[in-house]
Image (tube, rainbow, N blue to C red; front, side):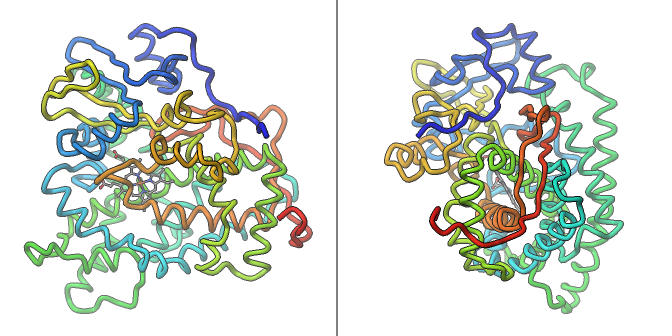
Length: 469
Ligand code: HEM
């Protein structure tokens, strides 16, 4: 059965000029794509001082991200743009420093810890329901704002055991908003290797100020817990900070220093809420556009959870809801492109790719590639039952990246998404609003330029339509 094609910027027929690409991509890099971008295996752009390759072919993607990952370290562009906030966090480091950090942090996101933080996630979901219940029935609501609120709240509660309601948490939240808004304006001059005098100095100044504000509040929260832990009073916390405080490097037996801990926590705030907020907002838009899927999600949520508070085991039982989120991550991958640098000259297809060249792998393009997916632009969460989609999943699906640098929070994000979507689908119905079609733009994540506004109705019954299950 053919399903609807949700919105995305229509690709241009022909490749744009480099100058247009630069200025067009400053607004949204999706605007620089053209029809062949969705079919090609490998493309290239050369400018003085810049060799950039776009890699879509699954075999090459695995070469870069998995098999020869050490030859393709993380690009310094993100490190440079995010350094004032993230310092030397795991998101941007390379080599031994990264290996040590990853070894120490993986435990904090293992299944056992995720089970422990489930009640903290659920408390944030309940606070979301309270906010939404207070809205007049059927009112048009900017669901992006609500998804940003609830995912930031989940991060505050699961990492620091603090809800977003306090003044300090709000200061961080708003400074994060400012920081994120400025980040894309910092990225392009770095990719295009602009000289220093052309750097956007005022934006750099403002982003440093926002980063300082965030870090000074985080430092205060973490200092209290860090000192108490090292004085032998860790407190009765089940949150992620407590497992980061316990983490030790097996080679030296030492834990994270105070500064390292602040870097990692700042990074978890950024990586952990913006991505999930983007994906959840697009999921709600897709639900609203497909009433059949939305009713089936409602029924599934009611059958699995009834009218009881959700339990940890329920998350795994909501298969359709999981597939809706999986399909959302295919169509609107929050991390639309992944950047790497070439450490040693490589042969890729018929091209010699020199050391220092930049490699871009774009989940956005690979997930909609005309040769890698059937009906690539259609929203069809049921596709994952077919053999062809299973093959595509194996070779052309990477919303969380691949290889050693794969997202550390993937299981956390999937648990959070099923909880939030299950909670919303059980209690509310979403309808699209005429004149409010979202416009996808590629910035730090894939967002809608004009927000995502939907009419929200409370369900008067939570009885499932059993015949539809
Ligand atoms: C839908 C939600 C999410 C998506 C789509 C996503 C996507 C990604 C991607 C694509 C990468 C790899 C980037 C690269 O290879 O350059 C990544 C890395 C990472 N993500 Fe996520 N992420 C999500 C949620 C989260 C959450 C909730 C957390 C933590 C709370 C998190 C923490 C991290 C960390 C720490 C890394 C760096 C790992 C490393 O370099 O070793 N992410 N994420």
